[in-house]
Amino acid sequence: MPAAKRQKTSTTHPKATMSSLNFERKNQDMVKLPKSAKVHKRPIPHPATASPYAGASVPKTVYISSSTPYMAAVKRVQKLLRQAEKRATAAVEASIRGKGQGRGRSSGGGGSVSTEKLVAALARGEGKEELAKEEVFVKATGRAIETALKVGKWFGRGEREAEYAVRVETGSVLVVDDVEEGDETDGKTDETTLLTDATTNAGDTTITSEKTAGNPTPPTTEARSKPLSEKAEKKRKRAATMAAQFAGKELPESRTRWVNSVQVAISLK
Image (tube, rainbow, N blue to C red; front, side, top):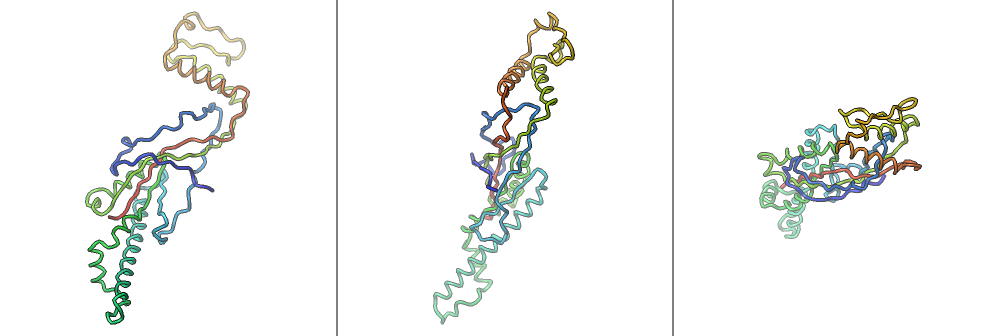
């Protein structure tokens, strides 16, 4: 199954809160569905999770759902970063060994690297640049965004801020919903309910609709002359537009929409 289409919009401060995030609104032209339609959300597809022991060229991603405990996600990120640190250390060790081999046999190069040499090389910052490039990505959409932000804040809080680099990016993901038509009774009920609710203002005199059994009682002069509230008028217009849109047409089998997403990138400094 192909990965969902993602679109990055902006990078924000690593300590950003849910309320401070900025998302681009991209669903203005999404087709409205009647209330009788049943919508089934498809799971968002994504590539298989990479092994922690895969090389630095393989992206390491932790996917967050609305039920994921944030500390479990933190431990998963820590495990991936530990493996990244081991790979960086091994690369530095191989570099030292290679330099020893380059000095010739008289220097005794090519053997194991002493701990002192390895520590000294790491202290000089060797391998630091490559280590910073190997980021672990924490990705989430919708209600899970809050958990992803908590994971990022954990790594950027207090003394850990000097050890980890955290970067937050907002974006959107294109997802697919399957649409099913409700039964005939539900459809009829919903159509009359939409029109009735849209022309009846809560708290005002009730206007009898055509769904009343038998001959409907005409609305009173007082009810007819009483203007609708602004909210009720907007609801009436939406119902009329929706009814016109689906008049004589079949419901679509599916629809696409954009959902908000965040990507929290964490690496060792």
